[in-house]
Length: 167
Image (tube, rainbow, N blue to C red; front, side, top):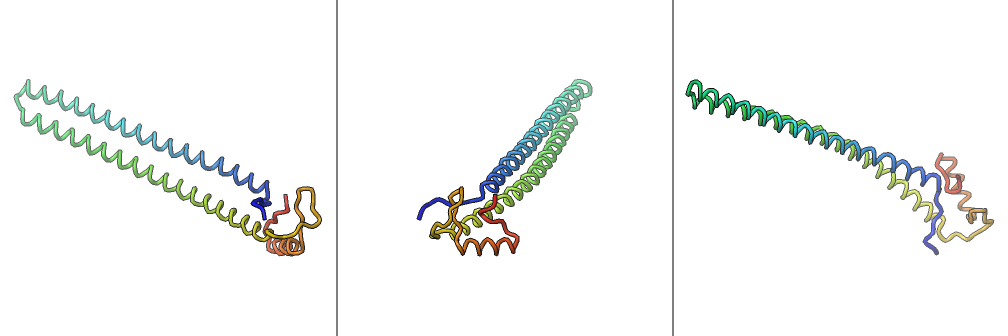
């Protein structure tokens, strides 16, 4: 018994290449979404600061011109509250959008993981089927099919399943 197993090299390499392409693209998309959300939040904060500054200017004008301190305080609070509400809405929208994209990414990664797990299970089944089989008529790769391997390959071929010996 050895720890070595025979796998379809091309299939394994193709699976690895698919993972290299799929996962980094999804991660980059999530980073872009996160950066966009941060940009929106920063923009909302700048807008809120601008609105607060404008409210302070208006309050100073009202105080100096009319002496309406109470009205100026109320207006500045209203403007600040409006800006904070608007910023909260923007944050909530950005968070919702990011959560949706990340949920989609999670689903994609889960599908990929299930595919990998199925591939591993299939390879382990093949390895278990070949374990303990005496070597006969070794080919160039060192693989020697026996009667059970040939029968299993025939059954796989009939079922449309790929066999370990194919390349």
